[in-house]
Image (cartoon, rainbow, N blue to C red; front, side):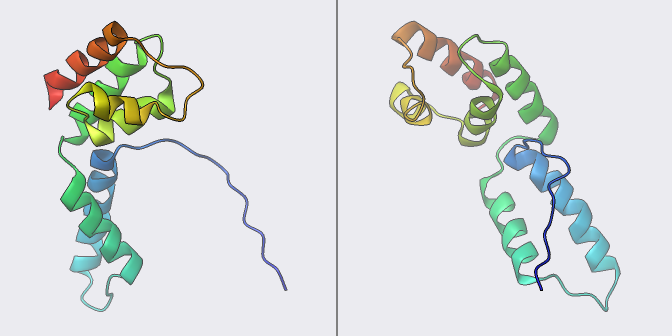
Length: 118
């Protein structure tokens, strides 16, 4: 017997936004003494606690500013907001799989936006 699951909706989240969502779930589980957190949930909470740098609202603002830049699409904006690259080499790694490359001025424009939040 095979059970198929259908994807109904999909949206990107930054690590900071995921942290806010998982904190709510974690608090709900902590209130119920009978329920333990599953292994996957515990690992996800540990991951977001380790890697989330910004607050959820700040990360959303950063994504919106990055999306306003012509060469940055939605997926890449979320990736940049999660990684917060500090120099051109780190930023080039984000764009490594794209079919286009950015020149120095475009990279600097993105890094200037990231610098406001990092």
